Amino acid sequence: MATIKLVDLKKNYGNVPAVKGINLSVADGELIVLVGPSGCGKSTLLRMVAGLESVTSGVIEIGGRDVVKAEPAERDIAMVFQNYALYPHMTVRGNLEYGLKNRGTKREEIDRRVAAAADILEIGPMLDRKPRQLSGGQRQRVAMGRAIVREPAAFLFDEPLSNLDAKLRVQMRVEIRRLQRRLKTTSLYVTHDQLEAMTLADRLVVMNGGLVEQVGTPVEVYERPATVFVAGFIGSPPMNLIALDYLQQQSPGNEIAVPVGTDLVGIRPDDMVLTTPDEPFLTLNAIVELLEPVGGESHLHIRLAGSEQLAILRVAGRPAYAEAAEIAVFARTGDLHPYNRQSGRRTD
Image 1 (cartoon, rainbow, N blue to C red):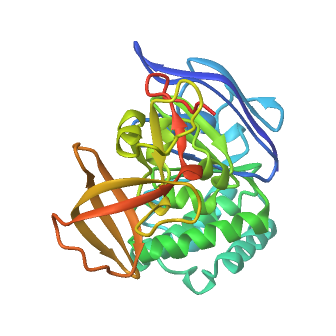
Image 2: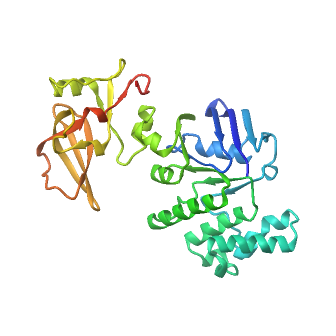
Image 3: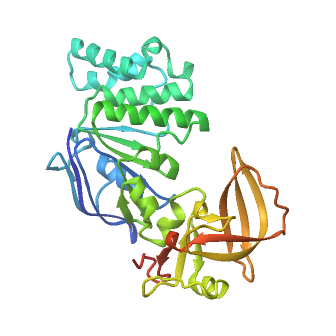
């Protein structure tokens, strides 16, 4: 096991910056999830740590050792890819053994590690099958087994669940978290799926445009998004962002106490309600655009009266609202998230 430390890490493709000076420390045994939209630099960052991408400038330390100039095989890491990267002509056992054989590992040690990985991942009955005889979830288990047998200092996961269907993603998410807790191996995990990120991470690193927008536990990032981008990206449905002057016009007599510099207010869909709260609140008139059933709850899409501003509420059950119906919604003043539109950052 080992720590990972990135110091002012940058990557340019010609004159185009892809990663713009990342500073990050990953503690021994910690699982850090890099999350963000496509093109934000998260996979490039992971590939630099793996040694699969060159570094324009900066430092990468694994276990206290600068590995910027080290070959991938010299970095003591194991990577799990989204396309499994299994050898189709080899059996599962052959895939698990291949890297160890290339490193000259003794036969008895290879057998021990393969047996241990097969037991952990419950793939023992599949050892003599070829990858084409396996389901997507089974192939992903084999890919993780190939990483486990190396007993590396760190695991790197590059969107390993993106090729699986929704049900399998949930199952594999649980397995990966359970596996990481059992092995206590330092891990960097990349995904664009914010639900996956929230459920897996010890800490989240939210990236946008080659920069880190916020680092924190999933609860910290959800409850106090540091920037307008994080507020709109983390959470499903995303946070509603409404102009402060509009709120003030719609709620005369209700003082909205926000820090100096605030001109944009965030309200979570869970915090916009259809009944008057006991605490101080704002009242907003709205028009129903769409009621979207989602299992035992619904997402109520509304347009705020007198504007083109759209918002979403999360409501229980399937309330009977007709499209174009006029309704009133309420938000506790204590649930508001204050931002400055120009800087994009919180003001409190």
